[in-house]
Length: 396
Ligand SMILES: Nc1ncnc2c1ncn2[C@@H]1O[C@H](COP(=O)(O)OP(=O)(O)OP(=O)(O)O)[C@@H](O)[C@H]1O
Ligand SMILES: [Mg+2]
Image: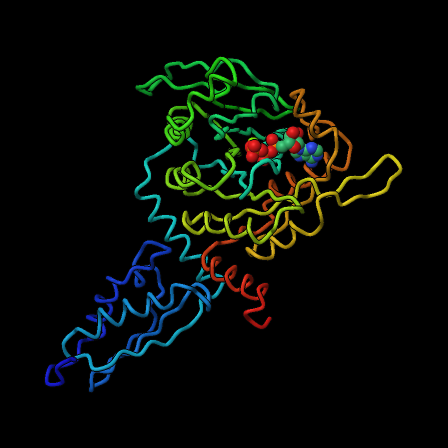
């Protein structure tokens, strides 16, 4: 217990002590993050601190409370600690995430990706939902509007981008003026008035079997090389086709290129909650933002015009709502999508089917920048809450 004969600490002293309280999710102290608000100290040693959480039901609340109390209550002159909890506004939440990203960036080395490029990683909590198909089609749709679009195939040993984009030439390294090490030159393909610049391990190794040998050897290393040692040159967009899952590559990418926004692909079939939790967990751990959700394989329309929701319905909307992001669009199931991928001519280049139109719509939304990105701060709390509601543990 504190000694009441000792004078209570000043407000500044309290603020300094609070600098040792770290938000474990955001990896910085609560003062720098702007979470510690008003501080007052009474003559009797009662310290009152306003703490704004990213979201009210934050699961880290108990830990933050314990940390604050243990730092302050042991301080001479403090008789009692009172925390007044608050919740951040959307703007404050956005600021806090920017700070967290900057903190992550401080430890990240520079990459060869131009700062003007909008970087988007196409990810999902589950394999086989169409990440690579979406990446290939979005890339050509963005290029068709006159953009220079980089495509980084981060599926190091399960690559499918070279086949889907019909680009399989071996990559070459060349010396660039003013750069000491030789740089890898991406393969290029012109689409309308735009240009694709593509790198994939499928362009380094002889065949898909050889790629298997790379397994485990250099997952994050290869991605790092693609970010650092490729001569990207001018880029409007960089799309990164992620491997299935939420493991090392994802985390490595977030560390190396923290300004990456995620586009999360789901099918209506997948248990939206499971995927949402995995994807949100990944975003949370890496401070990434979510640029939107794309529902792929939405429904199938037969030649008679009947619509069949083969893989269920509503998965994209549920996921988007759960993580607080926008649904960018729905892509129906069409044989032409798979055929386009197999022949290296993604349907979004010139197709007129509903899937092709949907992908071009999504690309336009991205170009116009009208869809707000979602900060994942507090996302785990939001999801936890929705799971509890679903399990009947909590009233809606
Ligand atoms: N909208 C669609 N209509 C029809 N077939 C599709 C559609 N989207 C994807 N496919 C097909 O589904 C299969 C899986 O797609 P894809 O390889 O893009 O998924 P992925 O999420 O990248 O898989 P992985 O997790 O293995 O990397 C492919 O054969 C692809 O052609
Ligand atoms: Mg893939």
